Image 1 (cartoon, rainbow, N blue to C red):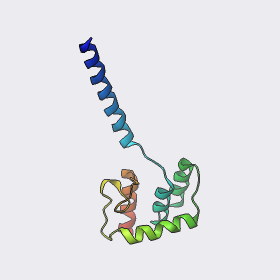
Image 2: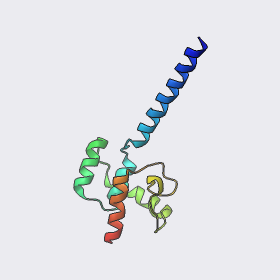
Image 3: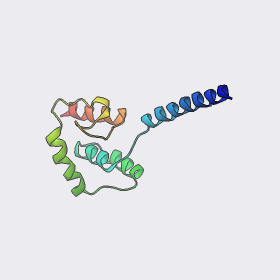
Image 4: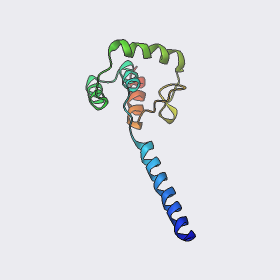
Length: 108
């Protein structure tokens, strides 16, 4: 009986770690994420695709409110560590989004 319980617990732990690992790779769409990308100048086609997955298009007024937050907290040499859009952000950008933002910085 104890052996079966041990196996059940080990299998449960392995499964929960797998789920957590999958969740970390998932892209989370948010109003803040959309506005960060919009304010940094990504293409309209990219924003249309993003808003479709988000289920709505945030207004320009909402996105303008994020400009101030980001301008105050993002250093000029920010390199998006761990996909963070700015220091203290809970939003994690996907690796492709980070690459897109970095390429836009180089274009300036």
